[in-house]
Length: 112
Length: 113
Image (cartoon, chains in turn orange, cyan):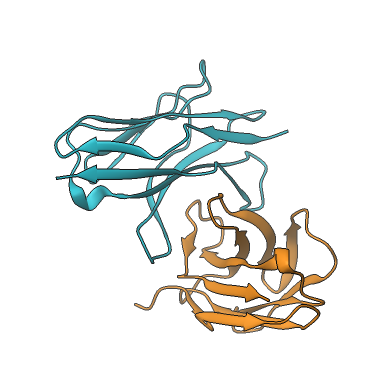
């Protein structure tokens, strides 16, 4: 079975631009979470979606938004990019009520 | 608030040495505790977990015991290998959480042959 997939793998953007990152969860998983991992630090929680509804939001500005589609895939959008948004963006999926989260390989975003 | 504190790295050991990576947490109630591993160039992988006090999680020779009295979840392995070189993250999920994980900063482990 395929694991969590994310696209693109790498991305380079300029300050002020907008970016969309995509995630496909493991088949059968209805919950998707997004994390930001700055180099040398642990991941920081951004969003969690379950059954297409936002169930949790971390301490991130409104420039960050996300949505989940009927097939449970998800997009993370970041507007007005700042240099500080450069990070590895991780997507994780879990089954309903599941304790474990399964992570994708991440999207490396570089803002110049 | 809820937080996880890990020992700073890098931790450098020789092959077959005993490993301990310390992790302590702050949380109300009874969180679930996890160790994740991130190999170079790869994503995060769940290594082991424990959901209640005195539970011992184990996998691939690694162990960690959920100690409520000391709010700790230290990672141990009796004999490390070069292939264990990676970054190890301790994390907690709050009792009432909607899947949100709270992470430590990670500890880089370097094993020399």
